[in-house]
Image (cartoon, rainbow, N blue to C red; front, side, top):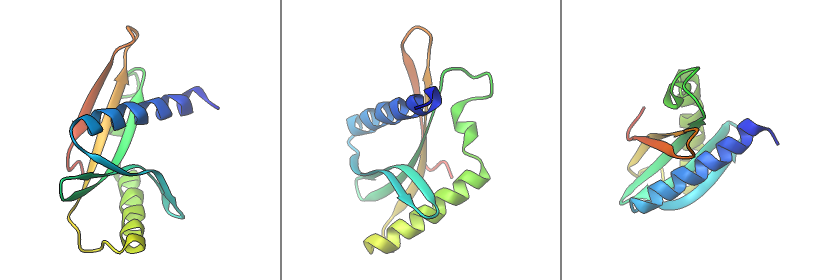
Length: 118
């Protein structure tokens, strides 16, 4: 397993803990379809939230949220459409968020939550 993969798994756990602390309820983790994957699918009150988590150790190549460009957003939307059809939730309120986790050399991390990111 690669170091980047491990960082992603840890980032998802940090994001999940953070969002759970805000009262979000986990519905799916690493939901996969033929179109791709969504890191977290959570309920925020009455809103179904599709969440992309990006984790980085440095900002050498930019901040984590910059990695969720137009192509990635389109993939997430396509997977979300498939999920909604599969679960019979086509008429629910939904949102797409990004959670950026930056790990610092000190062992601490910074979490940025972008609601309605796209």
